[in-house]
Image: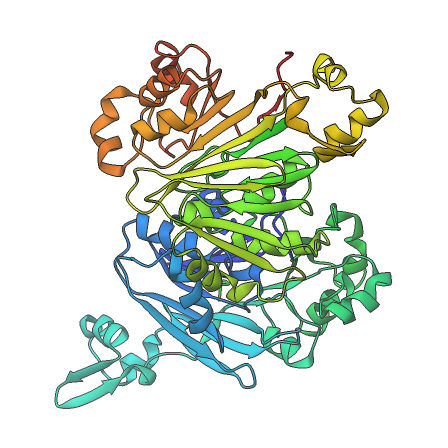
Length: 304
Length: 304
């Protein structure tokens, strides 16, 4: 199970009616935040999932609209009583940027653990049982797109366990610990587990032109959250110039990647009513939703 | 004439319904901003006086709730098309702090001119025809309180001018340039001007315990904007511990300083309805107003 909330959906600058683009994930009570612009802590208060369990903040890049809220966020997390390490991930330069911003948030009751990710190769890591892939995106500065996956093991195969003559009261030990020593023999979980079932997959990309590796990474995602800086197709020259995307470009990737659902986000301040242009996306990929601040969804494992 | 707007009235952290404490002054189209916490640029959009004419930002101190919004503010000012210098004033440490924050706002189309002010002596300077006094306040870190004055010259004394036999068509030259060479004699404006009339005076203090030099500086202010972190008198031990003020303490200073009006600001996040405690101030100083975000007032010269 994965809960997702769009913390904000604005690009470039915070607006009175729209917070800056950011996403919050919750799994098993743990929180992962992607980006933290000016005002993200305010929007998080509205969402109500708390601050204490934010285990990691992942930055797409270091334009101010994606990181300027960090000092206030660190103090809000501190204020929540967190003492456990906080992990920060982002492109190269992360430490230099954050150490600058931290001049106004110097004393914190937790350690910050930095990981600078290469934007010219694929990075793979795990936080709170979520497998994360990061790849470089196509923006005006070093920028990352992220994919979040919760894997799901196969079912316990009763027939295999019986064939191996493992007594029923040992099944849960083998299933949980992955290993069982019994009657002079060693059994491992792969001997009794069916093949992995479909897990949960979410792909997040803001501040980029469309590119094939993003489509590949997003393949078969349950949810693809993608920037749509401009609604009208006529703005393509501007999108190319500023290294952003049109609604229709995000929709084309969603279709090609065979995702279940597409949420558009990171709207230009000039786009006061993004929903006016939704058809530019739905004509290409029907299950497109215009993101709104605070929007939430619970993604469950499929029945299998 | 001086226009004043309370940009925000919150202390400690930005809240969904309350921006962080900040004040905007406007005189002759020029803007002076005091403090710039997270979200100040959003509130400024609501106020609608623009960004381009912000000539100076004065910081009381460097706790995040008073300066974390600076990078976004610098970018908003840049986006407005400003190319003229921007002046920044604050306690010692200003340059170190701002240069850290500017790691996410490096390229700006204007110069930043820094002035670090001593907090252990009185500083006097002028911006846009406003005479400013800064004194150190009593907080947990170096902190400043500011007084803003627009002086007003006396009236042109027709009798004196006639007695000196200055022809009527030369009066405006003398009045405007302050000096007139005529008929082999030099006349200066003090020879024909009455004594200075009452100007406009505004005093601003957040993040401090009450102290006598603040009362003195605020004397006879048209408007005294002062922090009231806590409404209830029972919170005095907390106010002392955290170096903040009660409503009643601000009111006592307002009364002693003989100001015309007191606006309370910088409310604790725990103070969801500050107006519930207004009587703790009005019982001492009647003309007390609970500040609200975006509140505005135009202060005119008195008829004299």
